[in-house]
Amino acid sequence: GGSAIVEFALQVPGTYILVDHAIFRAFNKGALGMMKVTGPEDAAIYSGREVDEVYLAERSAKATEALKEVGADGDSLAARMARGKAAYLGTCSTCHQLEGQGLASVFPPLARSDYLMADKQRSIRVVLEGLSGPIAVNGQPFDNVMPPLANLTDHEIADVLSYVRNSFGNRGDAVTDEEVAKVRNALKAPRGEGHP
Image (cartoon, rainbow, N blue to C red; front, top):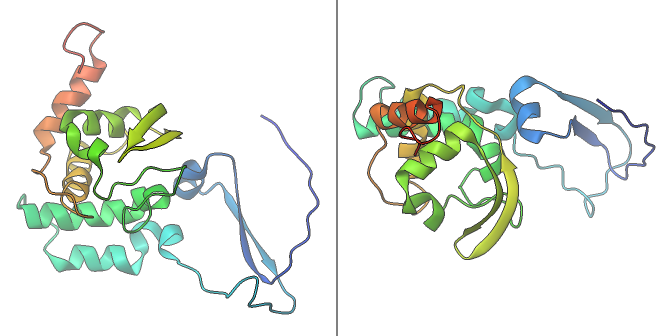
């Protein structure tokens, strides 16, 4: 553990979000604080417009709309896509952004992603194990950390991967619960015994 004491000055009023060093954990475990600052407005510095979906996760209006588009039950691609969109907005969009565009030099894009679409099994493994170290996506280098999401069920992972593989300019086949289960089980096996 560690701590720091800092002093800083703010130029515009607003609600400032303070997070710990792991931004993903902050959004999913509540390790964040909000500091409300008052004072004169300065639209040249900050217009006051904010996007709330990142903080509301699965309770956001967009995630709720996604589940209403198609019944959330069933295994049709349309139902899987609706559930996957809600899961994406509640979990993945924090880093990969609402339209899958990523964040330049920080979080790779999922939109028209050659890395995502090249290997379905690898994509499942990345969600289960996380990813760290250098990769290239659409010819651009990225070297950051994605935390593992093995806490998600096989069904949830299949839904969200089916969604991203068929959104943002991507076109691919759906991911099934069985495919996710197969990769998850292989990751539990000792190296050399069917490890993907």
